[in-house]
Image (cartoon, rainbow, N blue to C red; front, side):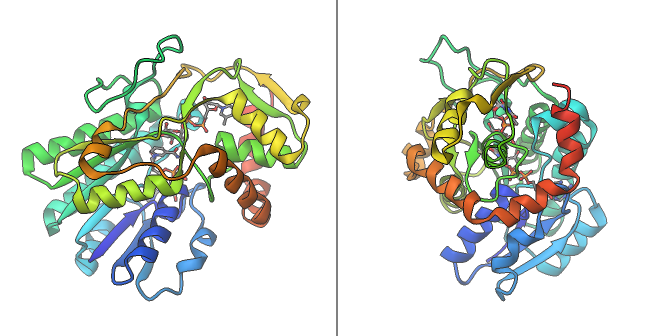
Length: 339
Ligand code: NAD
Ligand code: DAU
């Protein structure tokens, strides 16, 4: 079994590669990644010497390059994590989101059609469903919830989802799609809420909470997401969408307070800043389908997962300090300087 994992030098893709190489010692994993600002080769250091692993620096939009790799590797499966993934960046500069997330997805699926494939899996997001109101805790996203996006990021992911399902219906490409809620855990890029707050708190810097901090996200430990994708690849039904989430809704402000407490830092570091444009209020996944059909359930409770995550950032300072000392400084100044 040869699996091409795109975006494997990023947060979830790298965790997925570690999971797959650990669980299936006879699988060959080929990581295809452009190494954008969000991709880190150092993240993959633990598997670089594994004879079942190969890293290829490539853009998923590079049709010739992608076809060349398929010709060499003849993959049985493709799991597409490669994407521009940060909502705030999509508000500043939407174009690269459309390019990578939609057109890049198309190139990968065309390669699958040309060379033949057992499965193409699209890693998508609950953000394609838009948001839910805070005063309706009875509402959840199911696979039937209409697509109703808010940001350029979520719109590009929705566009890709629709294209993937169209390739199934039109060409019979054997696809699956998963839509997961917010992940957290090791190797999470420090522009995102949880690692940003951990890094800032450790450096005694202000903790910038958007708006009133009342927005709710449904947090899932990254390993649980990787296990769900593994199950979908092996047991999921072709042409189907599976929602992934663990009923773990938290307000942003409460997460930031948990981080302050765990690190022994004062809550006076919390600074309320101008809200994100079009900010989604609440995400909440109904995971009934993946539970009933594939037996998936999350294994890590938030109380344990967040402590493990904080400990990981304490033990791996070099990883994130290297990231935030470079180009990230300009990004941070631009996004938070006058906020
Ligand atoms: P990330 O930003 O940490 O990593 C993205 C990776 O993709 C990086 O390694 C980057 O170099 C690579 N990449 C970007 N453009 C590329 C291109 N044109 N060609 C090849 N590689 C490219 O993202 P993440 O948080 O790990 O998210 C991975 C996937 O999961 C994305 O598709 C995202 O939409 C989806 N997702 C993320 C979350 C979450 O909470 N982080 C939740 C649900 C779904
Ligand atoms: O729901 C899945 C999505 O989760 C994924 O598809 C995206 O790729 C991923 O980035 C994530 O999107 P969010 O926008 O929910 O994540 P982010 O970490 O950027 O923000 C989480 C919440 O915290 C959101 O309500 C905005 C808020 N926030 C974020 C940052 C970076 C702050 O209050 N302050 C901040 O500095």
